[in-house]
Each structure stands twice: as C-alpha cells, then as structure tokens.
Length: 286
Image (cartoon, rainbow, N blue to C red):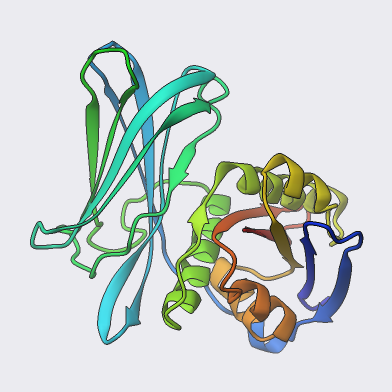
C-alpha cells in the first residue's frame, strides 16, 4: 500500500474535529532516506548533590538568509524527582564563541522520577562542526547551592557517532524538517514541549500497535496542555522523517499545519509496527 496522510485540528470553543485522508505517491516518497541527526547525552551533579541528566539532538543543516545553519532540535533535562523547583539556563554559541541566545526558565516541574524531560528549543546557530555549542546549566531553585553545567558541541557530521534509536532519529528529522520549512520562510521555529510530545508519542504507538492510521481526540490535549489551539498531522508508510515531511508539505492541509504562524509548540512520535511500517504523528500547539 502507498504511504498515507491525515490532518486534524481543533480550536478552543469549537465542538468538532474534521479529518481528511490523503494518499501519498509511493514512487515519490518510498525511496527517500532520512537526514541524519545526532543525539548527545550527559549528566552533572549540582551543589546540592542532585544529579541531572541532559540531552541534545542536533538535526540537519539548512540555508536561511544565505547562511548555512545547524538545527538544534532538542535541548532537555530530567532528574530523579517529581515536583522539583528548577532553575535552568540554556545558552547557544556560534563557532567563534559568541553567545547568540540565553534561555532561562525557573519553575516547578514533574520529572516523573526521571522519565519526563523539560525541553527548550534554542536558536539555531550558523553551522560550525566541532565549534558551535549548547550549554545547559541546572540546579534546584532556592536551595542555596550552586548549579552544574553540561556543554554539547556540534558534531563533525550529523549522525557521526550519535546515539539514539531509529525512532529517535525519525522524530528528530521530523522536528528538523518542520523547523527548516518554517525558518526558511521567516516563521518562528517550533519548540519541543513535553505535554504535546507525550500525546504525539502515544498516538504513534497506538497506530503502530493497531496497524491503522487515525486521529486522536484533540480535546484532552487542548485541556491538559493548556492550549488555545491544537493540530495534528498523522501518516504511515513513509520510511524516514524527511520523507514524511516531504509528503506533508506536498499536501495543502498538512502544509498549512506545518506553516501555521500561530503555532509555537511541537510534539512528534514515530513508531514501527510489527510488519516494519512506520507510523508518525505530529501534534502542534498554541
């Protein structure tokens, strides 16, 4: 069977969800290989003895405004606790050491005993393999102890020595491809967010387990993630994250979700069924 796509959206105050099935062309999308992505992990112990586990995912390079850039798909952290008052800073640096962005966040977060990550989406620097950096600094807010830091450096080549499962690489390519399409049109890159990501992961897993494509009820996402609008793209049969992005961008409805200027958040799930077919879900939030 050829790859297939479907789209769904819901805004606060609207009662219904409409979904349209769209057929992709196997001859066009069936042979595309995934763009590479590299997952880097690390850990540090703050002054109070709390160990933090951190992760960064470097995606594909792309050109924006004549500058070759590297996508930073994911900068996240977790720790072994639940309602943890957290003080965090994520800095991104260009290849010459210039700081290009500083993202700070303080608040209480449920890390679900180390299984849930708080995620930021740093500004993408100009590509400088071995030189561009992300630095994540963490500590327990208000404990009076010092923080700790982990620095990640852009890999020499995406995928070179990187870890992560096939699902991780597929999802990273979807995030990278989505943000490359947006930033090439001067739209804001979408930030990974744990709540919408959880729903995307669950939907992909359900579709793969049942070996069928369908939309989930978007109402619970709207409420639990405290959103004013939510959208979803789903697909199956596309062999890579880059392939499914090409499929979605070739369809007006899916393209509209990807390029919707009101969306700010993104969650992605990708799971292979028992017969080897990929099922993917993309959840957008505003």
